[in-house]
Image 1: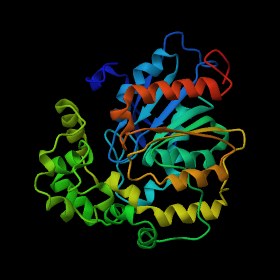
Image 2: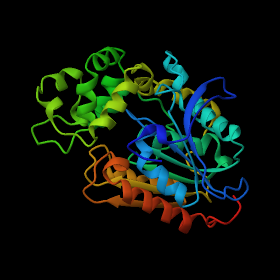
Image 3: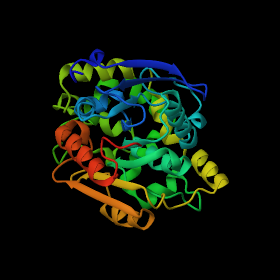
Length: 335
């Protein structure tokens, strides 16, 4: 498991009971026991891949965890349906449950970053009995809304989410695919100067194109890492952008199911966030306490959005330590 070599991980491609085919990494520790070994199911966000967890997989496996890391729907080696309705959180969560079924794991510890954080939070509502613990990075838990709010309305209330309105438009797919190296360089750039646009100010791709030097700025990825991302995203960006086009589908499904606002009372939940991440609103962290009985948050001082890259060792260590302290199972108990 060499983070610099994607092929050094154990890759699988399987058709799930949901009918969709997923690519995922499945790393099994020494002395694996189906009854006793805890399973971590790691879910990436946008625009990322299973590869976003490359620095944590090895340390967690050496700690004794089984680690499952899929390319989510629309990404990498996983199916990429065109229709945005296929990317509703209910359907994504059904896929994750089907992965657990495939590997014969009844309950897992779910870990998500960015869109993956939102997804695992909803997994805790759609499949509450399949979790041992829940860990969310960079995107805080928000309960189902009793009223539908269009993306336009959301951006009026939270202007820092203006980029999501742009991504929700179909034209963003063509824009980004035509300028993929520049887009990825922008997303994974080093801390920008005050004059450079941030993700929260990205109202259209024109904003990015007008900043001619953005593609020349250093980024947090090594050259071979950036090349891996480029090759995978050259397979198409429509699926990954479809996540931003699902708000009405998600609302309708959650309302029809009567999903609760609160997570399971006995579920331990950890939220990890960077204090320099412009997408994190501290007030939302405080508000989430109302919906989670066993809740802890850890602020990583001076860190931004890409925690698994920029604080790779700290993320691996804090999550492993928290699991052992908070779940009450340890690594030698039955899950």
